[in-house]
Length: 353
Image 1 (tube, rainbow, N blue to C red):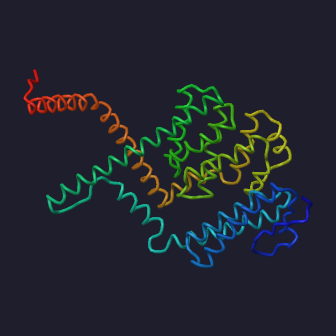
Image 2 (image 1 turned 120 degrees about the horizontal axis):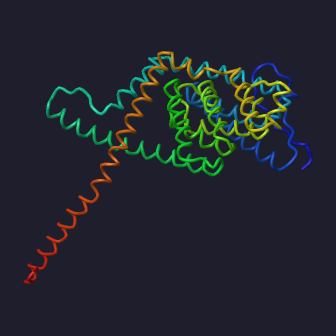
């Protein structure tokens, strides 16, 4: 394919029209930018049909990030324009979230709903509702524990493959996620998902230990209190690419570095690359995770994380009890089967002895 096609970036602000044009030189680029264009068109359609809302603004932000991922690193003005628009849209989302109690009421509502009991005045209604609520709570707790256990199992497997890590070494990583959860607002389940992805790019557990706090600060800066496992994996992928020498990923996210740092990121040892990456990111967003935890909403988010941890411990206990009761359950089922056999034999006039 000749370089006759162009993709026109949809950007706001005063930016030279030439800088909005991305040359398409091959089929792979055409396929990539066509997918990006579909995402942009979908976001524009949502905005036109639904107006400004948290959902439509978030969709627009995701479309802008999709464009930014594929802009050549040399087109810094276009990247800067996208970063500025994302910040403006995030500010609008924060304003919408603050209406009618906003995030604070949302977190408080989620926290209250996570409790197994509510105050009910009628004793009969209270007993019935409490049993129903407890049953749902235990069921949710078992699922939460199962999900966390599966995620940690995957981390064990990945670290074993890439770092030859022992179970104790993996536990030291999990301990870091626990400590980071107490420090900030990123839950340990989100961190474990990110750590699992980041581990695929590393060979030393010390590198992973150093980069988990960096990942958390980036998550807190970019997604605030609502960071998900998928978003943690996305950030971890970007960090992993930089550790592989693809420093352009840092530029697309608005991080700056010197030529000396760039050289180390491309040719240094893993320990050197991890140290430079830590410095580069920390210079921009270091401490954001801990700072968010000091806000009223952040403190409530920490309470929500504590409630989730309690629920996971309840799930672990419930699973253990279920497993321990299997022999008892099988014993009574066996007796019941024997009694049913005897009854059937008597019905046909046979001696069950």
